Image (cartoon, rainbow, N blue to C red; front, side):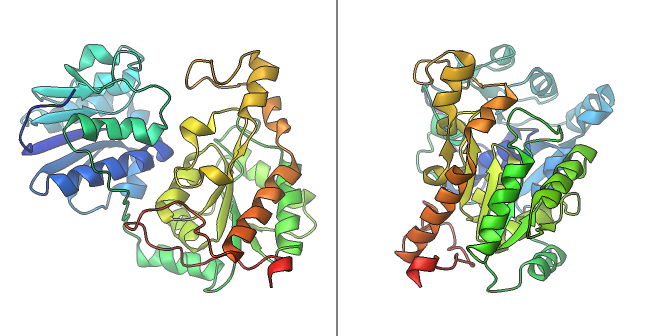
Length: 379
């Protein structure tokens, strides 16, 4: 379907979380801004996610702090009680987000199609995007722009960077220094089903430092579990990486990713932040399907053990399973070997040596400022 409407005067975007998903959402908003230059955009966003995106010019951000429970919902309703928007883009599949959407007055309420509208989202919308099966998450979100009659994608992020965050990153990765960032944890749980083993990260870190001459930096959140993960990697590594786990906010992390040569991470927010930064990502995928959730520009660099994990742990074939099915056994990530990851690093180096683009970007994405060095056989 396509909404038969002129460019709206005002649009409300509802996407509260998570970090990776708001990174997927931003180029959709940029696409609509490009098509509708006179439209006012308001984005209801989570508190953490606002620390990354909340200073973008041309978008009004309203923070919803879910930790405050019903108080946050009351504050939002009060803030919006005298306002009406022409269009609500309800871009999050969760009951909490749908309840939040009740505070937004808009005659057109666009949500997901019935096949994908989990948690009864379809009860809170009156228009729906077309159903397209087996899409990448970002492509499914672009369905909102397409349903509004905007077909040309603008793959642009342009997230503002404070000078102090840039200075922090440049101190950690001086200009011209090839660097690998490892963001090892998918979330704050030590043995989350998407997390790879700490000792295997340590082997990769040693290979990158000793064989490839890369500066290796660990990043992650401030939780005790993530700090413990970093300590395990440090203890197992022969060449100690720089451990910044718990030492960065999201702006500083984005600045580091902009300065880095490559990121290694499981399916997690930093992988999609690296996409926004134009940095190649070696994604580690066994528990989730990279065809659906890989870093958008780095799908060729992903280690993909998802089909094998689906057969071994879920007793299903990935090609016929319900789209988005996860393998929730932590042992699934053990299917990824150290040589899988170092092989991708070597292949990435070889591609750079041949002059290939390391990320599949459009002209709207700036070239990466810190290309990887040549491999040993390419000098």
